[in-house]
Image 1: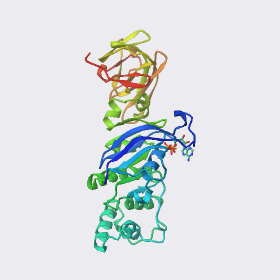
Image 2: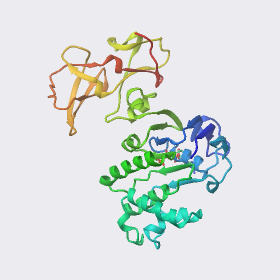
Image 3: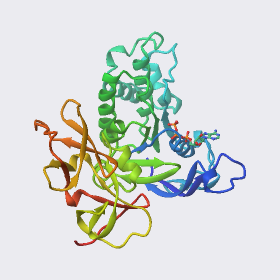
Image 4: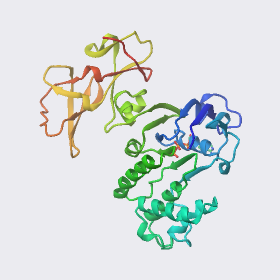
Length: 358
Ligand SMILES: Nc1ncnc2c1ncn2[C@@H]1O[C@H](COP(=O)(O)OP(=O)(O)OP(=O)(O)O)[C@@H](O)[C@H]1O
């Protein structure tokens, strides 16, 4: 296992990039801890696969270095990096049994037969395939084949890291939850450094200790699920994480008050003047409808989404969502919305600003 360091790393697919806009991956400096479970999350085209391919060695970065522990692997082939990979679609040997598929990476490394047997049994139990060990992979469902791929990715204990690229795409929705939970358990048990690429926030938040959110070729935040929810570092994180995402309202910030079209909103902290575009961000969970207290809201509709209800409205010409707590009746004659002051985030040109004592 190894710590992974990305030093001044950047990548452009153009041979002669003319500027930042030509870089699929903008310059980044990061240290990914040994034994961490990371999820790389972001919408299509933000650079997740590019970054994963650089870490795995499938792609050589146009700038910067990649280190595994103290070793500079930037120019090393994938085969020299001692990593395991699980791809979007199953990669299994159809003519081999499940057991032989799982044992393959260990036999390749010349491990002894007794160890292989024990390890394969252990992994098979974790992926729920212990009853199928002697069946040929041919004829198994896509789900089962992908479970074999996941098991094979995890069978070696000596890898520097395990990289997963959207591994649950082909898995049935009801199985996804189970496999995600199993992966998390495997991580706890074996402590591998794991990097898991996905565009699905639920997958990222349940799997990872640290979620790395990418947007337009940049890592905009690397944090715990709680950090991403409570303190989104960029408006994109606020919008992308949560269902619905964070409300954003243009506002003038003066000390410990934000003014939305002149109407005051008390903040939980005090802020220095902001020169560029300024906004406040509030999660729908921290907004409540009132009669007269807060900002005037026009309620457009109420959606029942099972456990709670989402009130869709408009404040000062901007869409605002409010989540009504479970079991509470929604009074659509209410006229205002109030935000919990210390849950309000302030953004300058889309980046979060830290406040001081109010
Ligand atoms: N081989 C390539 N040649 C040129 N441009 C590429 C190549 N691969 C990716 N890109 C571009 O680089 C950017 C990042 O792509 P990348 O595949 O890393 O994103 P992603 O976040 O993994 O997206 P997805 O979830 O769709 O796979 C995109 O603008 C994409 O069009």
